[in-house]
Image (cartoon, rainbow, N blue to C red):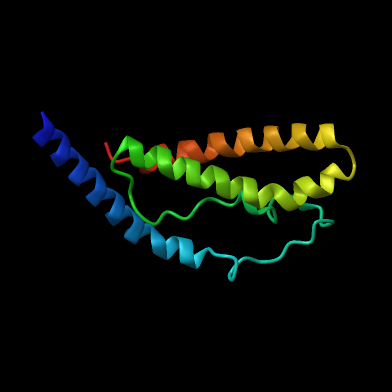
Length: 123
């Protein structure tokens, strides 16, 4: 039993290291140095100029459900960061409305992103 666990741990660690190496290029390419500054007073409700409405880059296929879940969490955090300037602008007008807008927007964007991720999942 211990040999099985050790073997499984070794595979998990190897997979984690490979993922870290593979995704480090994306993390470096999308860091703060390449991000555009967004003026919080800018109305991002025009749709085509809202960064959270842009599709996520498809760099590689997703082979496992666990990869899909971790990629989904990463994208959800990215979307939350992308809508932050617009959320801050809306908070100035009313916090309750801003919170409702953020939750509704994140729900809709997450639904679309999850659909796109499932399409990338190799079955």
